[in-house]
Amino acid sequence: GEDVEQSLFLSVREGDSSVINCTYTDSSSTYLYWYKQEPGAGLQLLTYIFSNMDMKQDQRLTVLLNKKDKHLSLRIADTQTGDSAIYFCAETSSGGYQKVTFGTGTKLQVIP
Amino acid sequence: ETGVTQSPTHLIKTRGQQVTLRCSSQSGHNTVSWYQQALGQGPQFIFQYYREEENGRGNFPPRFSGLQFPNYSSELNVNALELDDSALYLCASSLGQGAANTEAFFGQGTRLTVV
Image (cartoon, rainbow over all chains, first blue to last red; front, side, top):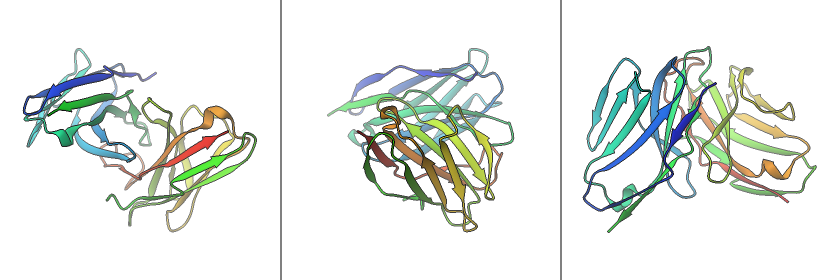
């Protein structure tokens, strides 16, 4: 079955870069996602990467995918206090319907 | 704002009762998925509806059921509530049933507490 794992907590200083890591087990994953969840809010899709890519950059966000090791990372440059939230790694595989499997989330704390 | 609205935002029920949660999809979206997010956990897939039919289900018992209406709004029904059903329930709407690259837009969720 599918499994997605993340570290639980990351603390960084404002202005530094944050790197959140994720590993997954499903070798048939087609898309991998990063979602952001702020307190009391739903999930916001930050970015996604197709499994045949190894990097995607979108403004302050850089996603790196190592398909061989089934490792995904999200780098946030110039981290701001507004980036404090829980970040979920997620994956989906082709299968007739869109089932997204989420990790347990990494809580990012940005220290001013 | 994602255009996906859920109601109610909070709900308290007693063990053994039944509950109905509602979701209004983003305009034009024909697919809705429901997720359960227990405290401190990631969301877990419950099921997905496409054009009023269930077309995928996660590891949840039959007392979790759903409906999707012609206007693509949706309900999640849970019978015989248990304490462990306490969670945030999220719905997500998207366009297209199986395209993994289509973005799913999530609502704010309904916080269900079972006492």
